[in-house]
Image (tube, rainbow, N blue to C red; front, side):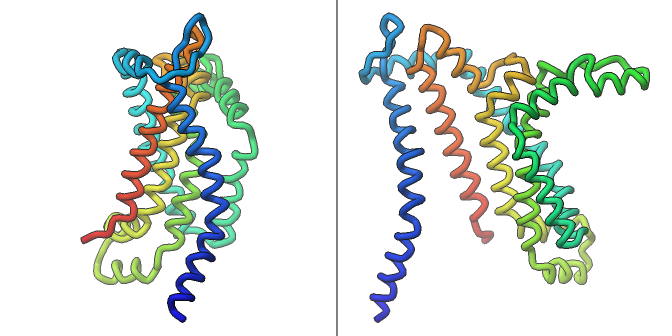
Length: 284
């Protein structure tokens, strides 16, 4: 009877997981495999010719501009992840421990609202705010300060990354912090731990999974974003997403652009796998 029950549970679980597996196979594995195969094609007379030649990988990986764009993109995504996580944590902590359930629900609702609007529209609004004659510099002018150049800079790109990822990270952190057993916090306080020590020795370890997952989402969104570095960063220096566009415009080099795209996907898979492993690793 036990074997039948275990088999029944196995088939039952497989039945519910099958649609997700089919979806992932059709819309992730298959396109990724085709993209990888496309990176070995050749371009002759501005036309792609099917083949299996590593010349595109050799040429792209030997170019300094590829590695400059790679390191810049990685560092920008990493900086955006650290800044976003640090800004989101106090907000999430306040929502999880200092507000009522009703207030928390309304806050999460308002954090979801920005996703109802096109990301491109929000970035265009930041152009108006960050411009040399924009809202921020106009306010600084009333204070007698000279205007700051924020548009078409690294600062503009980071602002775009935060616009994209900050609401999501706050939501994920809030949900994680809200599920912490409050009795453990009370026990730590009864043992003489101050608030700051409770945060670092009790709350953060217990919410580790949610914090890391939120950071991973921020890194993934920032690493692959095209809109912010293009419209707010001025494409200087270019990120990998911009390099893909520039490569396709240069002699219809779609196979070389596929090399860049595959490199990005492999990087994100490694980062996501390492982060998830760290999140679920048990303390010894």
